[in-house]
Image (cartoon, rainbow, N blue to C red; front, side, top):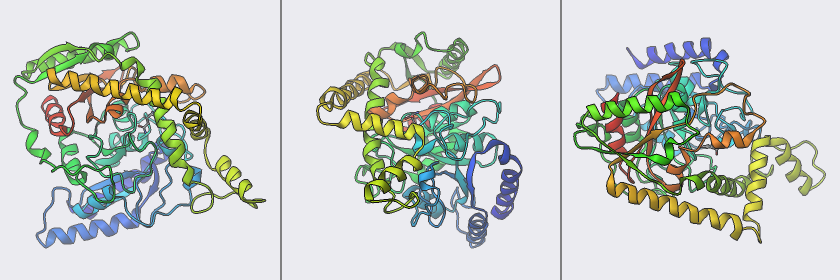
Length: 453
Ligand code: GLN
């Protein structure tokens, strides 16, 4: 097939099915057709890249030149990005075709995609349920075969949790592996972009295309990028897999626990050696994350002031009124809540009590992992404590939703790479298993997931 044929087919499929799912905020039809034609021409000239002519969707917080980049917010509903994020540009350079921009929780704050200004996304496996978040549109679009892949971002699980809820594969790389330039910031010390696709093999190709040093992001690490594809076929004989006992506590759904047991047996059949490990400070992860992430968000979101870009209220009386009303009207409830929590945690007199404490816990959590990786090569655990919940079920209860992030946020606090892969179904709902590896060992995660798949 030519790229034009595949692109036309997918655009048609999106038009037919997405009015139900709501996984796209913007469909970039003419851009897609233009890029597909160019890809076919490049191919006719004998140029080759694994991703040449492959359609992809971008989470709508990656800046895409000339296209609305909304971050799921009324605040940026009118924002046309003047440049491409590095991730987007690298995929364009590889020859990918941009189908559109996928739905997400507003400013990536949430685990259910229900905080989006553009309405919730429905889980394609059961349309009465959430797709997870914040990259809910990205994962649902891949699961519904509206796109072979999507970019996502993960601050506290936003690639892995929706991947788990939709039965697809997603990888959050090591902090600093992928450039954050042009990725609208939520919590800068935790944010990392990565791919969501059907398989680890597809994720390997995509990660190879987007990883690497970028001068425009001062936290991007200047380490060579290995060819992830060459890791995939390595046998797992002798691989040491750690099962952290703290991740198998009371809160875990019994159906997920038994799917994890089966997956562990499968890994053993493939030659892995399994042992129990302990990550002693995990209980503190949620409180630490929900201080650090809002604190950084409150600072990052101060740029949305109604003056330079985005939403501005009608007829402001004076400057103060413009700031206040633009931000009150432009941000949704969850974003406002986090700005308030974060501003409080950073304010003089409370900084030591909250932010500094949270940073100390963060270090302890990192140390737990460093110790664990002296004993094992990878860690395996559930991605989520429960399968996808009902739409609306946790809307009025933010803390209940925060608790669902218990297994994913630790990788972000420590900066480690982590992957979620499908391991089965609980009463028809997809379940994910999570793998974590030492810094910059994305290849190992993709290898284990590929062998398992
Ligand atoms: N659910 C978490 C939060 O709301 C993580 C979101 C994310 O990774 N962007 O902060």
